[in-house]
Image (cartoon, rainbow, N blue to C red; front, side, top):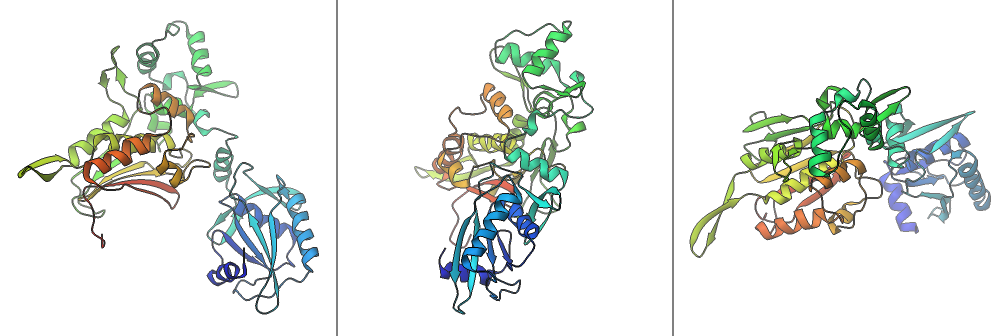
Length: 414
């Protein structure tokens, strides 16, 4: 970091990635800010800068300040870290200590010492606060120490799963046999080994993934399962709608032995909603006026499948949102992109991980997903370019990920 970049950070004041602090604070206080930034996306702490942006400077020598920071990072944080440290002299001949914290989340959740206790802190805007148990659980999930999708769902058991669908999956999709329904113990063990069931102490319950994929009534115990689909007549959300549907049930379809869908799941029902509401666009071919669908169905299906596979199911009370407007189609998936995944990687087709690996693998068995992480590039970006010459928008903001497809090229003001 150079002096120009430092002054720009100071001028912009505190935010979710920048903390201004005096260097005479208590070590526990500095550890709290370090851990909170690490538990979000990393960031920068500027020592020797007041909350109002005025530079008071370091009270320690450069060497003493660096040693103080490194000791805190080693002794007051779990796991210990080695931050990047620089010291920059400002125009007022005052030194500012710069602590740069990596966005790498492999150590999450980072805990800070508070007296004799170790506490998990998170960043909310320009404020650091103690994480709730749910927020701490999502940090463990981000670090891939706990897979939320294989956790047992309280209050469920073998009866929560649709045995007809499970038998259909093993026999007609995988072409494998499974123990007879009367052989309850071996069938239970197979489903445990497959993570469709999960142990919860002395009990066995349906796993989150098992309930999402094959549940009799997933929303009874997982209200965040499913899709809210709405078609609006204009360009923005409004009370008047053309069509709306809360799409509930298992994700998977039932198929014949030849792979023909005989009963649709949530994914196919959502695609059907878009198909019946997206309309068509007119174009000229050889002087004749023709019509084609507003969006290529492959791109629509891929956007919906991606939302199902990558959404954060630990975020309760919010569905995947599918919206149709006069000029566009949008799919909003709750939660940030999975650990290490960026919008640029998604666009380039170099993504090899999913937040919910089990969902991905089983939906791949149903041929919803390509094998090599090229789905967005091959099934969204290229098809919509060929269809109407537009570029899809891939947007991560406000703790959610959105795919937006346009019906037609926009002008520069659009």
